[in-house]
Image (cartoon, rainbow, N blue to C red):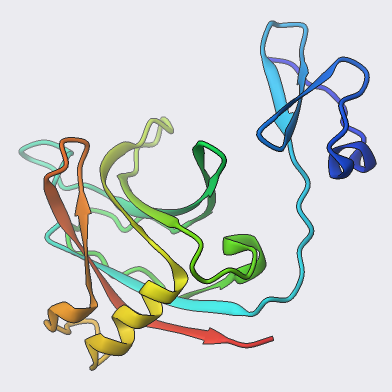
Length: 189
């Protein structure tokens, strides 16, 4: 496809140089094959970590009649007018009520330490060709995720208390499943 080199000092300073252009905080350079590669640098610092464990409940099957979807979730943060993916879980094979492994997410990367920053959690059906099928999404924040766990009580993977349930909606704005916050807490720096 093509490639280019970026000068980190210039990207961090967000100054256009040597044929580069700036777009919503990203520095872009055109490549010979006709496309553009965008890059942005972000300072990482210790803002604490979000410990998170999610479970899907009755997710909409997008795989077809005889198969089951292989769901994974992706957490994105708003960057200008679009959502920028920052973390992705491993897929759980053939399961419409998956229990994903507990993970620790760096808050400086996830939300710049702003626990009220809008986040998007999207669920996809994993496809080996990389063209994953959208299953549903929701918008939330770190504080809302932690509150969902706090108000949800129990904490086991079979918790049926709907206070820790977050509803996913598909492209037609119809409920396409539920994410249960099994565990969520902050580890301070």
